[in-house]
Image 1: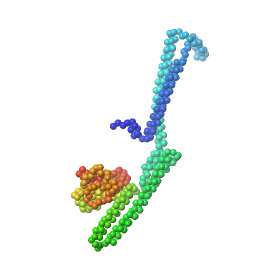
Image 2: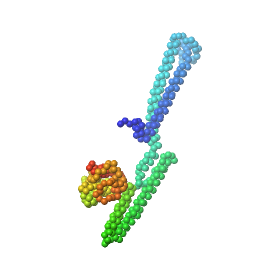
Image 3: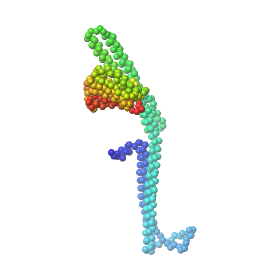
Image 4: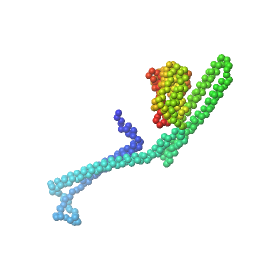
Length: 400
């Protein structure tokens, strides 16, 4: 595929484009100046040659001394043809030849000098562009280091009050707003963890104590329904708090054996899978250490495997595989249209499909995707050819 010159130019770094612009402008201005000088020189020389009057006189006989005075001679008004006419023609041709040669040499060496100066102007322009863009490079490096864990850092650009200084001040003001927003979110999560879960715990204790056995048959069923609703509300709150925590990013990391974590989570969910009539297995050849938060990574694998168990059919299977570069969770189940796969990662979005367990809150895969993003990993889903879903988790080398 051929690229247009504009596309090639736009693909170059800004510093290189600025240097090319300097060279181009210098070359264009130099070419215009050179053409202007050549035209004027040629026109002026022609006018001067036409205005020259050739005079001849009697030359003194003998060898003249270089120190002898030269006296003007009387012009010869009527030169003797044809020898004088031929001499004038030769002189005219000589003058024109000298003029053409001089112009040719002037154009040639001026063009060479112009190209050399254009190259030097480009190199000088690149150096000047680097000097001018040095504050921008410093701002970029500082902005790259700033994340949700060190929002207290600022660009703090020094120097005159120019466009770059105002840009840095605007960026620092934006960081102030972001820092206040993150601090507000952290306070909300910390407060919600206590303010929302404590009333549910009190409510559950009251139901268990106030409606203790023996109870009439009607109240026993009501008590179980209330306890189920209480547990579902607590699970929903825990899921929302976990989602908020993963969205904030990681405060610290440590090496986590993902293979061991996968085997542990698979063993914990084996009774749930057996109760649904499913076969579940974990294939992990060797330990696989990744940097991350062990609690969040365990929740990530739990949500992936639990989702594979819930969205399945009796007699199906769930397979968890690790090969040192990716983790895959594959299950059987109903067919899922490819265009509906992105909806699985949206909070509170569930597809109308058969489930082998009780209904969840629709936050499992969205929490998993948020935890994966916090660890700079990618979580993708692909429908199986005969139904079910294949979830693939890949970690970026050296992340987070």
